[in-house]
Image 1: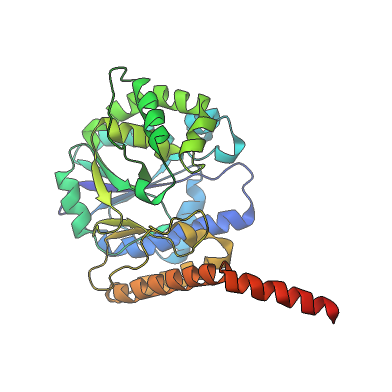
Image 2: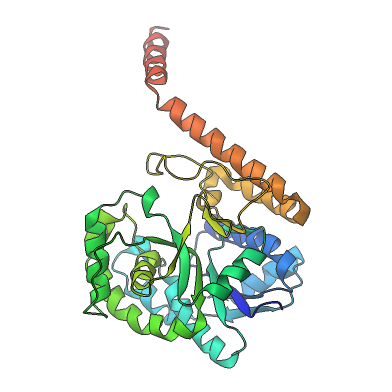
Length: 342
């Protein structure tokens, strides 16, 4: 391997998981592994799951023959943070933190690895060189800061400051603090014990003040809030979501909650190494996963992937703008009136 880094993803199934949700999660994982398979000789991949049998069956079914690949089982009783969350809607939004304890023990036995890349499964890897390069230069953490694309204000900084001070009481920072996307993070493995030691105190405060946290973070509550606090304390490297060629957070849909400042187009020639696609898992867009998996089998077609992502994003945004326009609302109003007469 050219660099001693690990790429890790966590897939935790809730108890009695619905069939459709399970199929959707496995499809996301299959998509990610399809793209990542081109780089298995350059990085080590670790999957963490509470159902390793179904993961192994997926690998056999799809014909994935991986070198530099491990599957770690996280037992349900080890999902301590997930179980302690006070809201059933966000019960499994802290699985990455829980899996970090398992990964920390893994790295104690595998000391050759220096950096850890944590990735959600609803993503694609189009290149690995830039990720490796940034990993070498990351002494603490690196992650996308998408605060400029979310509804936040100074109260967000107050909340994050208070959360940080639960473990580091002397911390205070007047600048705008980062709100990182935990769908892509690079960690220096040496700092993982420090991250784990501080996590419980920060989590307890966030959990106790969940309503306040949601009010200042666009109704978000999960491990990204906890990691944001640690990221700001450790002065991590911010990845620009509009310009970075390392990683991007890219919506293929458009709703009122998605800021108009979020990226609209990706460069099909100079594309990002990693693209997190949160809307790809929505029920009405599941066909997109299937298309990307087929194209992802051929590395030379990465440019076509970007063209498709741009098309889906532009189409969704145009549709959203048209259906919310004043002219369209008048049209709908008149159509309803005349349809009632006949």
